[in-house]
Length: 122
Image 1 (cartoon, rainbow, N blue to C red):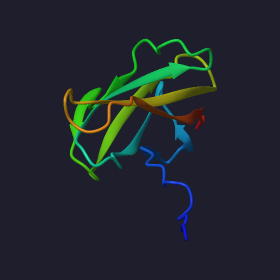
Image 2: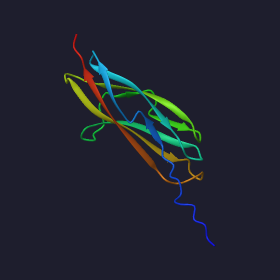
Image 3: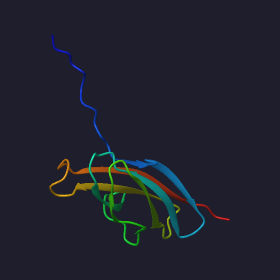
Image 4: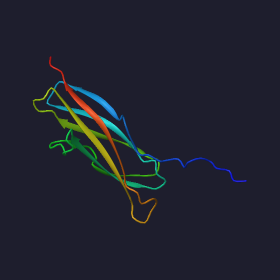
């Protein structure tokens, strides 16, 4: 008799929150996201900011754009995105993971969240 336990569980890196509105009174918006490494091995991560057309946002600043996370670890990344003259702006923040060579799974992973900056006037 063969017992089938179902499909294997997928491990997925995550950004939290995946979607958010950032309200500002100034010429830039800032927020903090949390990044998690679900893998059983340490991973290298790069974090990038893209506009609605998937071009990198010029002038965006990140507290950590390149980092390493231990298995199961979570960290936070602070992002500042310029708004210029627009009343609102949508951007994507993407985290891409890479294995350390010779350790763990060799797959590359990527997760992106969608965020919107809204400028309020006094």
